[in-house]
Length: 145
Image (cartoon, rainbow, N blue to C red):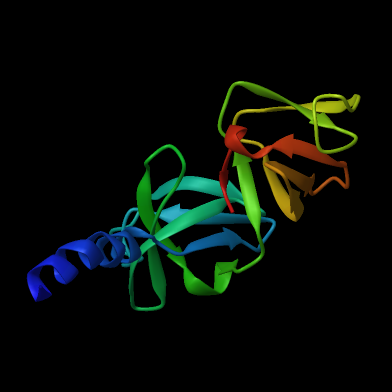
């Protein structure tokens, strides 16, 4: 009986372990480095505000992170926070006036563009770009939270 219970619960424990924390860049631009040591580190990526990153570990005031393209590096903990943010994961998306394809397109965004997430409704995210532009995007076309 205990063996069956353990077998039934094991996937939930594994799923919890696999779920990594997502943080977002809070500075206007922040560098992601190849190492935590300033003497040997190189910049891998300059990430814009609201750029989501999956935390893989931490060391010496840095988070080891992975981005939506699978790049792995280190970012200073002081450069990220818990603001909800997403990045466009496909070539181009329509940002609409409301949550659904029946709403008019306000503007278009391209792969790699980041947004702050303001709200979520039925598979749609209300987003705001750093420039102030706002609208709704289909959640499956983005990566982050």
